[in-house]
Length: 339
Image (tube, rainbow, N blue to C red; front, side, top):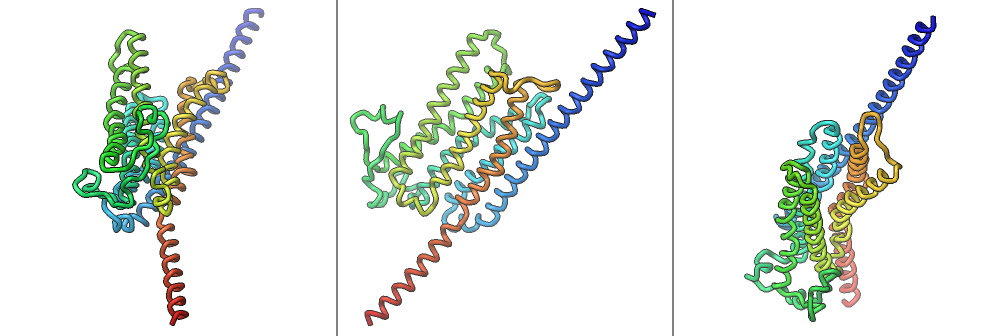
């Protein structure tokens, strides 16, 4: 009787544990499904908003110049690319994440191209052509000699000439400051994937740490230099660029990079202090990554894609047309009064 009782108790406890594990796994699966649905819907919204913006405005952008339309297109596509990358990362959360790693690398390289495209966009909006930048044609007199304020920390390396005057050399120098990031970013991403992510094992944690530190420092120096170039030129021609909503356009780029970087740091801290913890199905790193990807998808859909629609729509041109019509009417009335 005692043996039978013990065996029955053991069976009951095992049944209870199995039931609990079943419900925990089921609950975890349901939560994962909700995350996938939310990120999928957010990604679709971001793609649809960007497609709508391009479809309704691309011909008007092309009228200005081919360079302008190309640069705008590169910037507008940044939000849906980030959303798609995060959604694919969520789909491959439990798999090898090979596609997600490749998309991450593409996304990081695309970010550098976007920064360079924004500087070229500001150049073209002010009428600076490729010939002017390369020194084959003179730049307009009203732009020549404009005082430049190089921001910190690059101002520390300016020597005595803290506020240089704009000329063709400085146009080329600002372009070099952004284009160096375009070339360095893929190189640093490749080194990071090969050695830090252990695609090529070094069997030495000390060497891996040194490589990671070099990549991080080089990346931060490179991206800071590129952002300084954008801020320097924007500050010099803030008044002339004001009708084109340059600040909103800049936030479309800077905001995406800022949010994706710092919210990742915050999620790491939440995991470190126990606010986020591993579950039945996913590890702590996977849960942090899932939160990061979900947030990125939602931010692209509800913050940055709508901001792109505002920043790159032709509403500002319609306002200009209305103002020109009002000016013409006022001039006609004045001429009538003088007659």
